[in-house]
Image (cartoon, rainbow, N blue to C red; front, side):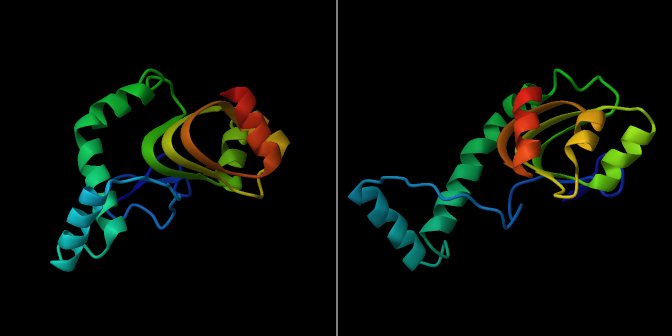
Length: 152
């Protein structure tokens, strides 16, 4: 589901299945018996391939812990101009310009992926963003990545 958070161009994808085409490679060592069992389920058509089985299993394991993850990002929710969530958050230059124009600063808290528009300058980012709490991947220019490290 795509949910508007602050302005129409700041959006976050929240949810599980089919959340994003963005993936990360992970190497997992499995025993021969477990792998053979997965292969049987794939052969029976219950899963399209091994990766599908593993992603589905991980989602099922994460679901009971959803509240714990939400609690991690909730302590700073009470602030105005706060963006928080689990998923993919995209922040554009236009959004930050709008905040800077109003002399407002943003607190960002994301478990997942934070994408900062390549067109965002260091000056604009520093003027419009007060703090970033990120558990996951940051997609931004190297200069913005350096600033995020300082704000974290």
